[in-house]
Image (cartoon, rainbow, N blue to C red):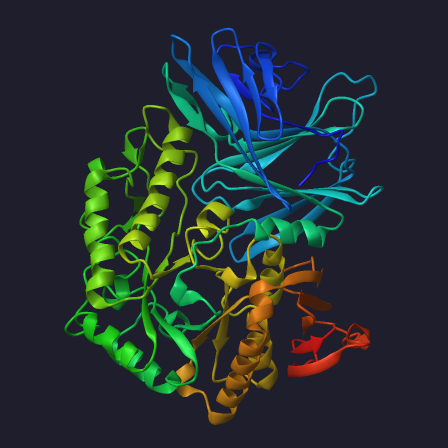
Length: 616
């Protein structure tokens, strides 16, 4: 992958004690500070850009350049005879970028991935009349939900030359991106950990110590579709071998809403057995009485009133019906009724007090007791009962950081990395287990989390009409083969509603929930017809490229118009069409010159949908 020859790829850092840049930027950016003025470039080639100062402190940008993308990270090494404190360290910096449009992905709970496009003029990223003073757009996410407000994702467009630069940062803690203009209307782009100003982050390195940033991927291309495809294909998910082939899941959450029992599982198993489901996931509430399941997380004691004899008989039951049993955990948090709620020595604190968000507190995932406890309560429990699937949820945020000798921001970064290591520990001890990444739906849909999981909850949008919009948005930043999409069936659903919900899942991984045990034969016929179509097109969902996303950018709660998404693979296309409120019929020109192999659904009214499998 090659950047435009005028663009410079570098790294930057700021050491405590050195002067800030000036030009009205202190508090907005730490780039181009005295620290960098004091450093001499000593290497610049295809593998590395390196700087060193007179005290023998080095900064290296490490490059892994592939055909379609470049993977980059930075490393600081303190070879001096005294400690240093870093208060800003980029994963990389791009200088002299020519672009007139900025594309970002916004996100809030149940409304993930909305594309936001602005011109540099709208962002006031234009030079001053004399080149003095900088213009800065700084954005990111602070806390333990890295996809909150924005994804760590950025695309820059030069609409005159049709050049696009795509960027994705692999960071599950606080992060930032900066767009800076000083003169000549060219952009500088800084990407990395949230700095001291933005994320309360500092890092001390003693003599002989080094520190490496989270990595990022940079791609180029001549269209938005190309750069998005290259960004997601650069991701390296650790897919369980059990999860190959895009199998269909059932999750009982939208059937019981936190009230699962042996009887409810048995009832659902009898109804769905033999219909093509591979996973049966028991969601939240399995460990507590119905009235307090939300506050009982953390104890993880099996409620034998719900599941007589424990969970082993239930797992055996699920397997006897030809499915793999799965279960829900929220392993990093504890509820107010947990016996460890007041055990401050095991909890994350700020200013000496346990961090409490609502009725949640949080385990210190670097504490040896906590890891031993969770190894017993989570990993051993999964093994002992025969679970082959685990949904790991996370339902609130730590905020700016946690108490740590290196400060709040670094304390947060280390604890999030410790969480990721526990995910890796689960997989090491149960090699074939399928791990679902969930954080109130989509708050952790960033690459470093996606790479240690097989699947992810695309959103907590369970039954909204905006589901196809969210699912389409996510094609730009995660692999559709990892994006698990709810299709919640209700006995009150008419044909259009059932089809609409099923077609949604063709935008990713199919997950059925809802009133499955009470649906009539006709409703099941529609669902099974959709499941059969999904199996016909799953190879396109898995291996294809999304070549078109035309969707609604207005109010998620009241979508209007139409949406079309086209995904292509080896001479075949999957064409998905949804109608919202005040919609028009499908423009059939998208089918011209193509042979229809199969179709599912009908799009003859508002809130209806149809899917086509065609040969191109």
